[in-house]
Length: 198
Image (cartoon, rainbow, N blue to C red; front, side, top):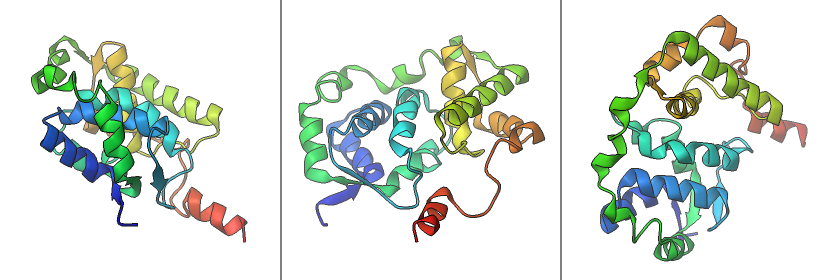
């Protein structure tokens, strides 16, 4: 349908046009998509728990500072979410949090609290990674891969007053003790489900 656009492009465009801080609009858009405030159609390549992932990523959106973060997973995966543009714009027009108040918050404020965060020691990063894999196991979800785990761990660390770079987290997550908790390379969850339904 011509009425559809991917969520990644819509957020980037409307952030620029409406002068809403990108990270703030991203946070509110992810929460709204997870809450089904507008119609979203997921590409078949995404895991079935994509709504839950959006809900978990939303609080972390405003803390992004890595170089080119917007074009890296998990944020770049928003290109696989197709949105009815008219519904998204109607939601955005009515979302006072994303319009009226967004322009009152300068982009610089997003990182204003960063200096207060302490560098996370490796045991703390390790603990956060374990916690995320425990959550995935308890909920019966696909364990996050090395790239997906970064944003989840950073969110958890920020809540505890710590910070760690994506590279640090990936380095710790790549240890053998964590490799065994992830899916091995091969068929995706989506392809396995398609195969079992035949």
